[in-house]
Length: 210
Image (cartoon, rainbow, N blue to C red; front, side):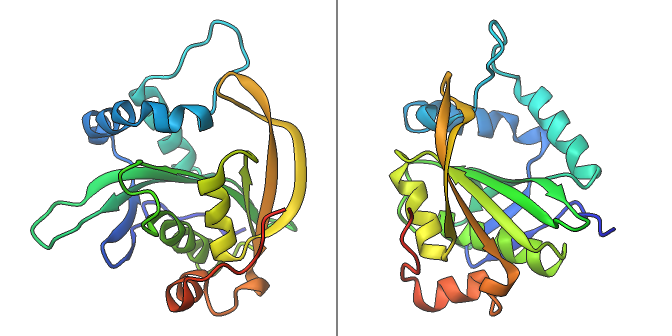
């Protein structure tokens, strides 16, 4: 069985994916606080009554444990807009539910700040991670599940050529309720030239979400 190696560092121009670090807490918390209204409707929540949100430290420890076990890749999405500027956190991307054997699949979730939305950062980050999953981990399928109301995220899978697989009723607990999600997937055979290369070469929508 192949095992997901960690840590992993990926980049395309000024956009990077790097491990989410314990010392990122202050910056991560500030970014989340400044984008609370933007991200709130899409945030995962717990269906267990009385269980509040986890602290950053608890979240990081659990993600780091899963990463070391080869079960997930918890990335910070970074952007550096000048050679003199330290790359700053503008989002998060997690590859989770990594499964090998006959399935060889994973799921992917992500968010970016409102300040960088619409600038091609999210599709580039997703393409980077998908290529890593296909070429380095030997996975066969990447799945992304999106609420039907989340138009910006639907545009990401459209741009990258993810194939719509249908509606999943009350699929995930988001923003306090069980929410319907549209499921999208991409297999290695559907992007033989690489997802990032295809995206950067044309940047045009390839499919229409269901």
